[in-house]
Length: 526
Image: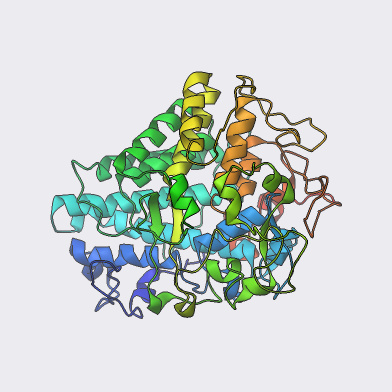
């Protein structure tokens, strides 16, 4: 098996800081695992190296680092693969080909999306495995060791969950389909490659890992979280809620989301949004999990905000990310969220910069001069919407309405869905395409998913929901502002083959347990 890049080598080059508000990633004195994991303080350096890797543009692909800056790069990809986000121009080419569905063929080399996502998440897994394997030998306070090992299990669950959603269709109906290789031990050059486990096998591992993480991170057993980038008990439950949602395990999704919201976070108020709340602060009360960046790790071009904030002079200035006209029009003028997109005249557009119809202002640098801005990975509101969907799917319609009204009371004045039917089916046969009907929601589930799309635009990866809900999508709706409508592609197919990424050739070259003829993911017949 080809050795995945071990971050221990990365640790030797990190210039770290030990202030309380910064990740302690000071370099160790040796690459020896015995030294690195001799005590919990040293082992936390390894853990922090994983978190650091999640937001910096390391060598996740041989080239094109400007679109390979960790987990937010992948989430942006997943949003651009759907119908709610528009890339208005090609700009320098970054993410343009994801938006066009023209990256799957890049599997033959080590540049681009097929390789970078695979390589990144298996690097996380490899390093989490090394921490977990050392658990019995690490010295230190038991609560601190529990926190360390619990986070490693949660990160492994997160990585496998991310891999299986990108390299295969959704869980339901595909349990016996090929998944991804599963490794639970540290890997070396001598390690033997694993075959593709089934989707069910991968989720069995994910479930086991997140349960172990939650047990170890229980506040009664684990040391308190010291940094917003770290996973704690409540974040782990948020991950459990996301996983259960994917599996249609509605009772678990509801329970886990409820627990995730019990850790002290709160939803954004209407006043927060009216005052221009910035989605760039990992310490905000709405944030369960965020990655806190410092100046030494910031790069305007190789960053999420560099590709989103058109008011800064980076890539977004000439490759603007907009909301679709259809989704924008679903918001009433009483909806405070409408103003996180361009609120100037919709017919007066500049060639460059922020003055463009439907351009987004949700994601901006906190400090564009120093290219600063934290990455928000999980918010209180996402848990509210998971809870509402799970309640609706259990036919708990009054409870689902209450949860949704609680959110919308801080979003839209005079919000009223009394005319929406109590039903947990999506309206997918409307002339507007497989989405909420042009005239508005017909069912309660229509409305919950609509509000999820608006509230979490740019945060959860729209194509992942399209796959999970098995709706397919169309960009060719009336008045569409999409610059690439994908007319030659059957994106209406709920399990369109190109929703699934190709496996990189390098995996077949280095893993004798996988065969490129039998194990490669299929292509669409366009």
